[in-house]
Length: 143
Image (cartoon, rainbow, N blue to C red):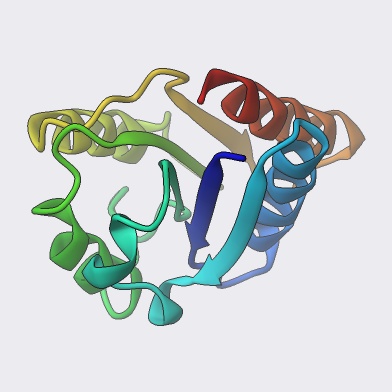
């Protein structure tokens, strides 16, 4: 069974809701998926998983959360070359620039992003939760 790590940071709970729905979809899709808050994940764990799914909301001027998430992500970047990854997060303003920048950054590490990313504006509604579950299921089928 393929292993998926879903690693996230959430300030308002929106990205956490997304992470939980992605987890459910990944498990329903047949993977061994585990949920980690950003402070509980590090570069030593990267090789234990077939796929790493990173989740962070847009912060400030459309950047990743800088105190807990970004330091963990930067530490893991050197271990991502050749690794299957995915990205998700919520936003409340802007047009998703933070996600497009993040996508380019993770691809520059040599990581693969076979299912791309998932963004949801504000709190996920019922349709948003279903999108997250499908994203998780699609990821489980991919690996």
